[in-house]
Length: 103
Image (cartoon, rainbow, N blue to C red; front, side, top):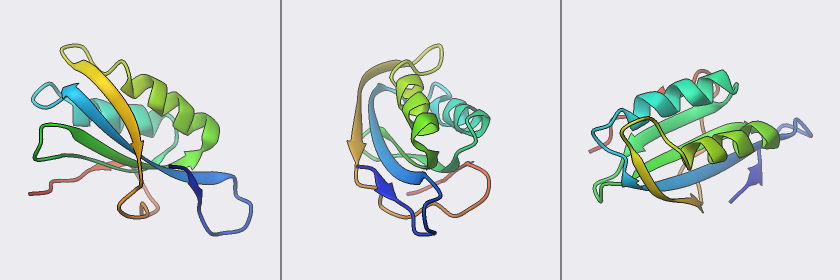
């Protein structure tokens, strides 16, 4: 789901994604961090207990569209079965995109 951040017309959105497939143990989080950073996005990526990966990202619609497209391909060694937009579970803090370690 896309939602506009508060701040009055900055054109920034927050989106969440759930990626399923062979996406753990293949460098997917590190690749996502690099891809999101190169697109100028803030947010985070983390592994989920069910074997999927979740992303919460903030930026322009154009950059988020590019991230979504890239997530559908993934890094070498991964196999992406699906990328689903999900409601972000938090608002990304400003600053660099980062990998979260959740248990």
